[in-house]
Image 1 (cartoon, rainbow, N blue to C red):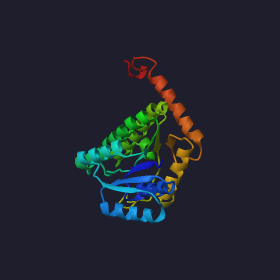
Image 2 (tube, one colour):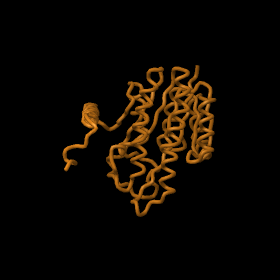
Image 3 (cartoon, rainbow, N blue to C red):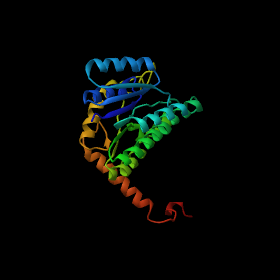
Image 4 (tube, helix red, strand yellow):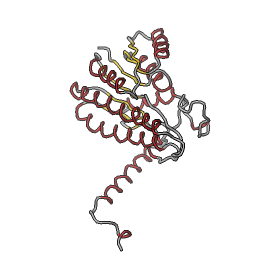
Amino acid sequence: MTKTALITGASSGIGAVYAERLAKQSYDLVLVARRRERLEQLADKIRTQYSVNITVHTADLSEESGQESVSHLIEQQENLALLVNCAGLGALGMAEQITWSQIDEVIKVNVQALSRLSLVASKRFIREKQGTIVNIGSIVAHMASAGAGAYSASKAYVLNFTRALHAELSPHGAFAQVVMPGPVKSEFFGDKPAPFPEHLFMTPETLVDTALTALAQGESVCYPTLPQLDTWQQFEMSRGQLMQALTQSGNPAERYQA
């Protein structure tokens, strides 16, 4: 039985590479993005290389109608085995410059759409006792970055939401992975100069290959550039110690008492 992968944000960058790599693994594809022309070009390119079925679906995930249409696809698509949420937006700018509409759009795509599609897929995968959800986070989830508050907050949400989702899915034979890259060579910064040195950037191809290797190894959290897993384990241990300290009593700490 041929498996199907649905990929959002598939018209360029990370999403487009996921489409190519999964086609190479013989997945049929449902490609979702706003730009139909780019989706069609990608689909034609993949069809010349691999014998897979490809469906192109245009949707703006910042809109209710777009989220609804893709949710319906997830519910109805035959043999769906993998959802990859690559669609994402960044609203960069200091508080005195950025507008609410920019932040609202980030929330709608990075948080609301990702959550909604993941939830729809989760219900199906739990019922079918199989299936994988991959959500793209970012290392800025761990940084309260001036000038990128909404974006970093949205990625912190993606990290925690996906980890919780994995805990809920795994007893039912399903899986959720969050991929946590650093800077990636893409259209993210547009015409603006990137605020990071060139050597820190990873190509989308390297990122996706690394994430798929991590997925095959059963990693529910993938930090592609992290040299030693011990660093993550130490972070988790510190987080556990913090939670233990925070829940010892309901009394205020001594430093707050007169």
